[in-house]
Length: 199
Image 1: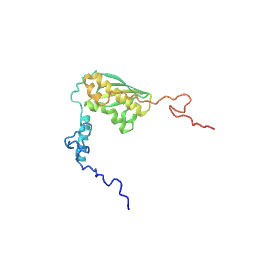
Image 2: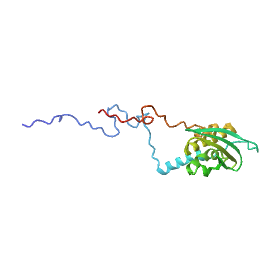
Image 3: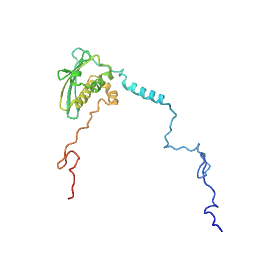
C-alpha cells in the first residue's frame, strides 16, 4: 500500500488579490498606508515641463531689486572659496568685468566659470547696468571663480538688503567651505596610509 501524500488533507491558502490575508473583513481599498508613496501616472513630457518650470523660476530675475545707481555709488564686499579671496566692487556701468586688470574672458577662459560668475547679477537683473571690479589672489581658476561669485552676491546685499532671501534661496550667499583636508603625520596624504607588510 502506498503512503498518502503528506499535507493532502490541508486546504489551499492562496489569497486572491485584493482580499485581506488575515480575513479581518477590511477591503484593500479602505486600508490606507500612511507611509506609502503614491505614484502618479504622469507622462514623461509632463515631468520635463514641471522641471523646466522650476528652472525658469530660478532663472527669472528678481523683480523687487531696487539698487541706487547714483554716479558715485560703490558697493564693496569680500568673497571666499577654498584658499581664494576676491575683493569685489560694484559700480554703475555697462556690465563689464575687470578682474586683476583683465577682462572676464581673459582671466576665466572656461564658459562654465564665466556663467557661474555672471549668475548673481543676472538673477537681480542688473547685469547690463553694473560694472564689476575685482582683485583676486590665492587658489586656482575654479576657486577664484567661486570666490568672485560669492563676492558679487555679498556686494549686491550691500546695495539692497531686501535681496537676501532670494539670493540665499538660490545658494549665492553660502560660502562653499569645502577645501582640501590637511595631510597627517605618518600618512601619505590626508587619509591614505603606507602599505602594511607583516614580513
